[in-house]
Image 1 (cartoon, rainbow, N blue to C red):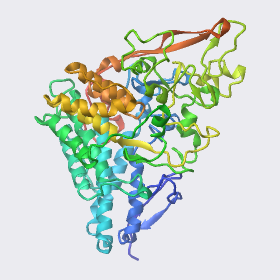
Image 2 (image 1 turned 135 degrees about the vertical axis):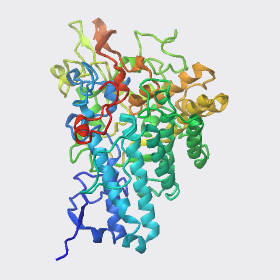
Image 3 (image 1 turned 60 degrees about the vertical axis):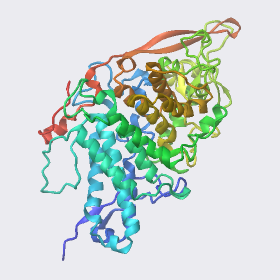
Image 4 (image 1 turned 180 degrees about the horizontal axis):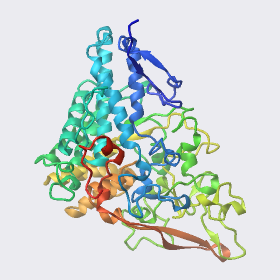
Length: 574
């Protein structure tokens, strides 16, 4: 009997839908299908593509690690820290990363390249497949989706490691595995080529039933972010580390980044962002599909971040401890001070009162953060410990369970803040799911901020840069920004920190800006006390100190990969 090669199409339990926010794609193991059957049927090929969408990010930093299924990269950023027992999940303290231990980033290299190989298996065979003869339009669109997904994976890999090996064909038994890394510049060119080819085929938008699948807008958004990163200070040959694995020596780099953002802007008609008249309206931007989302990972009503584990969704993982939440990512007081006052002044000005830090702040402060006295899920958040016998410790304090709080006191916030963004406060319990809540990967506000930053760096275009910066800032009810020069650049960076808070940007932005002050620092928090008459007071203190090592601009190449492929060059400092 003729031996039939087989391709294994595995969709894990809990695999999200790619055809709808609400309908669930078959969540059973599809097993093994003969390759000739798969490549003769456009519908079977579509299922292969659906599986490859698992390469996109979600609420979890790393699904192979129990803790890291429940938070993302914010715990290692300027924005937040890992709260439970002050554990150093990201291994940013001590001696930092090494090639044998990079904390909760472990296995990312392996998993991303596994997806690359699966995508390449598809691309190697699809052009000559029977399915292409059956329905060329559909199969070419599927092919474009796969190129989009491969580019998106490579964008993440080079952000983490610098230059990596480029694979544009699948590995076989006779393949040469000892391949060197390509240069960073070559990787960027490879990504852009894939995205341009995908964008030429993909539809500009899709109907609501296909929310979560790649579009031309999504492909151009990935290109915009990729070229913005490439143009940044970290990849300037004049900065260290430098060399082919890190440098992007393209004279037109900032104009290229601006043009990439402008391509998205032109397609959407430079429209205003969805209006948000108050914090509640702003919160709702992250709870369902909307026109400002360019690409997102959709979740159905009975799908969770990891399998059937509802404890991997943000309502459970980020609510304060007294509500029964795990409060895993505690926003730093350092980051909370980045939020402006309602009148647009900063917290370093006279209008900020350190004794009453939550008063008169900008709208996004109230949408994104839980803080002492925030009205959340039917009561006021209370982190305070009583210092007078007439008072009671707060439900969300380190003694909360002793006074009626429903959670584990070890989860009480060490910083005096919790993440409110992404949470659905209409749920009756933290273990319900939100039908259709997406994990947003690319959105229009980011593109406007990409464009503003790129235009500023092109030079001579500050007026247009401010126009798009203010599309974001004034939507959040802040006064128009009129600064110029270096102050304008700092305003662009601050706006990016706040608008894109907790969305997986800051960890990488501070690195590409080469801003060690926001990478290694004393993580500050507020300790709240409740005195006679319920009078509240706070004390700022250092929760932990996060050192900075220049090697941490990039992750190391995992040691086991270098053992398998000695031609790989290790990153500087490792």
